[in-house]
Image (tube, rainbow, N blue to C red):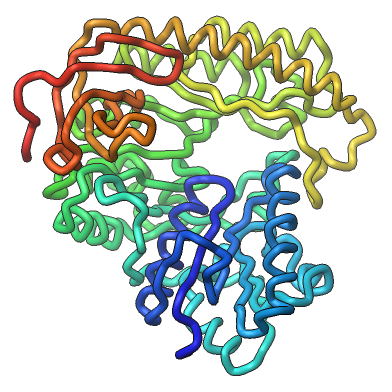
Length: 451
């Protein structure tokens, strides 16, 4: 242990991975290691990996190859691969990169300390077996001092035909509401102002917990959780992600409209605007249902910010079906849309289907969708012009040290002049002076709102 003084974690992929990395960083801190920004100066290098798309996975192997070469010169270097690639590949990773010391799936993030003890005793370790995720008692090494992630449900029980997540993150396991509230209370005491509740399919929260009320309604839903944690002292804003249209309810929308700390921002992936493609994806809803969800949100909160995910070039997708996706995007008017060309993933049904599309077709459709998305985002942004918005200041603008940056309740990145030492973590009223597709420029008004 004495030789291991510095560590570095590189994180690929989703918010869940970022939250896992923060927890693993907290474990390494507790073990006496010190963070370094430079992986080449680290005695322990950990890659927390993503396998949702092939390019992310290949990037992992590229990074790993450099560190494996370094290990031949520095045998005491400890190499760890965590996350979804680790879960998917398991022992095959050791055959491909024998220099690895530890391969561990995402369910084992809380066990990093005990797994490393085995490594330090001279054992090469693979930890990918399914386990019950014990309650998280680690203190994360959080990247922000203002906003924090809080996991509420692990895993996913869906079986979307393109997605590896259920196979690598395991079945759904919800945390107890009291444990979530306790973590949020500690975060509030530490000075954090905003919490994002996380789940791969957060609307499924509580399905595996007991509880039926007198009317026969299941208790411990995401909506119940939001009411339960809403009044945690110190926390001024609450967000949640990622939602699934199959389980998104009007009762949840009502809660977001009623509870003042819930931000008016919803991230609800639709993936395709064509019903036949949605059925092939096994998404379990139609584009008509998706449109009704957005209509209901806007009925309760007309100014709500809507973001989503979409996939183009799914096996068998015709030009007419792609046009249905464009039509849905044009009709709804998203504030932000994460887009991707379909990427066949190992172990998923769609990867084996014979009607894979040509890469050039996928690339062309992605470019056309992105063009529409940027036009829409710019148009949606214009509604902020001259408006007064509340911004939670998170950091200095890396491109202009005279400015600070933060996000509106609708999740728009906003820049304005100010002193970060005075404004960090403050809720500042600003007037918007300039709009762009994905960000705003503003001037501060009056004094910051101090809780």
